[in-house]
Amino acid sequence: MTLEAILAYLHLLAILTMVVFIASEAALCRVQWLNAAVVERLAKVDMIYGIAAIGVLLTGVARTWWGIKGTAWYWGNPLLHLKLGLFIVIGVISIFPTLTYMRWRKALRSTGALPSEADIKKTRKFVMIQAHLIAIVPLVAVFLARGIRF
Image (cartoon, rainbow, N blue to C red; front, side, top):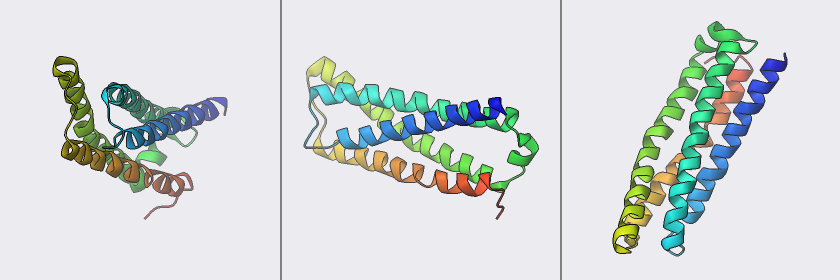
């Protein structure tokens, strides 16, 4: 029972960290606010977001293996596959902003150039898609936790 509580806590902590840092990216990645310091900060914030996402995945898998309900219960439920699928989609979408931030930082460090307005808006759109998809995952999770199957 203690292990289940610790795993649930670590999973929730990773989720909250992920949400905080995607919200930070959304707040920082704006045409009006982007300057050299923000370009550097976005790369760092995105790195923490990525680490938190890996933490969410690892703690979630740990809960399926060592949690009370066990692997058969979790992996036999299509909602887990939907939740994991959404998470993978979010991860794939996150590749574009990550590569963009690295490109921006490289350009800034080598030439001092800031990204174009169009590039900032395009990147922000991907960040916002991630943020909105992340909000759907808990809906699936509450149905999964209650053993509801569709």
